[in-house]
Image 1 (tube, protein in one colour):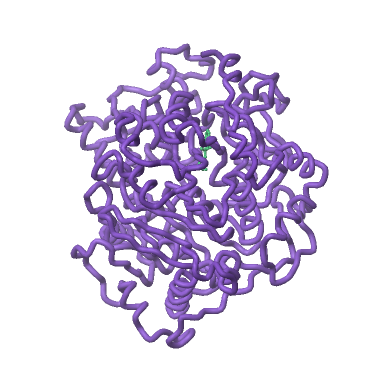
Image 2: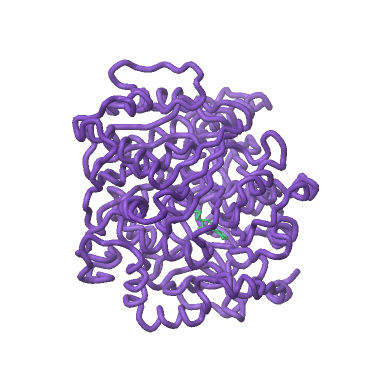
Length: 635
Ligand code: PRX
């Protein structure tokens, strides 16, 4: 299908969906925000509780270090938990959780608040204070959000490391964040197997000996070593008539913070080997995340919302944990693999819990699509009202399948484009808009996105260019932790005054955005963001490897798969066995998601005269495409 046909395939949400939408008119809301950006966001901020109001909505006196709601006092946890306790929501379910083995746990707002208070006391008793960093490396259990919220409650900064990462990735993140306290699990269940989280943590800590305390939540119950004086069981700490901070208490005062105080940092991959810690703050993030979730997914009090991402990624932070709790909604969370024990697992849970809104990644849809329609068709999916996707472009075929087979042609699909850095949805439909399969549609009100050429000039409709953002937004990253220069250089220096996303896109004649993909050295594998340099440095850490280059090539289910080109050290012989060893080595160092699909041994790599590997040339060769401009190629 060509671009023209693509942009003509239109799906209109039903009259019923439109009639009950929280936001009735995209145009009206967008015009308001365009007319008065600060007034628009100030009005959104009114939905939340502030201990003290702001002096200024947007302070742009020190660009690009924008500040939002300056002078205001708040704490996101007050808005997520405390304030609901004086309403009927005290007895409403905040969280429903199902384990891969079928375990079920539920938390009312009252119960979740109590657990968070108790764990906040545990952290305080361990000496964690406002501004301290805490690394959280857990499976998908309710204690993960509890740990995040407990940190935020006392003003500590959480750094969640995805539970699928491994030793080197974890070590680097602990070290960079300078965490003294880490929180983990004995293990987690995934696909019927145990992921050895505690053992990976132990190995990482051998490389980062500054960590003083490790709190271990018991999930699997299998035997793990505990180091005396360093490691403590979560359940034992929680059972103590705690604590020095608040003896024997289910109560813990929520720290009154500045709107611009840091809430969390989240590492993400960029163009160098060193992952960068994206820093988000309490006030603006509260407003951006709460507003977008309410408008885009149209959550209602009686809804059950399921964001099937991992809490260890931005999607989970914003839309499993903080967003739904800000709105007083009921969030469902599932521990395990979508196909365990059978490919109907997700659909059986939609039916069992009466899920109303499902938000997941295109790769999951493509993966489940492969098993055929019979699996979803065995289930009553009529509770679903809206669907969503995130993380990578959704191919129109998967979109149509999701729409027809899962949504039964009743549920509009919200294809939300955003990033770890943006914190909130940026280009996204509202459920009152016409949809085009494969397009994330239009910028959220208040967001100005555009597609520009190398010089920063807007390109003509239908033409490909770089995706940029032209206005600041409240949930934006504030900086890269301990590296403000990199923040400026990475995002704000390609085009003066514009935020550079790292994506390419085109905009059609209706102003709809079509995201094409990354233009930097980031590979999206199953929606997970990995840096080529991280993979290459893991490869080079193996004694047989002299040099390596990693690229992403199209893959039917994963979107992209990692292909690595390796130059061996003198005296090393290429073999299939060595290729397997190297794949396993990357899996061990970084995690299974980073394991290359294919390793090719080569005598040399295409490089520029200054010695930079030209991955673009490798990609073109692998795909049999023209190599493009190779004037700088050395070889
Ligand atoms: O390339 C875009 C892609 O994911 C990148 C951001 O990755 P990450 O920070 O891990 O956050 C993912 C979850 C928000 C973007 O630069 N991306 C994200 N959403 C979409 C997308 N590409 C196309 N369509 C989307 N809806």
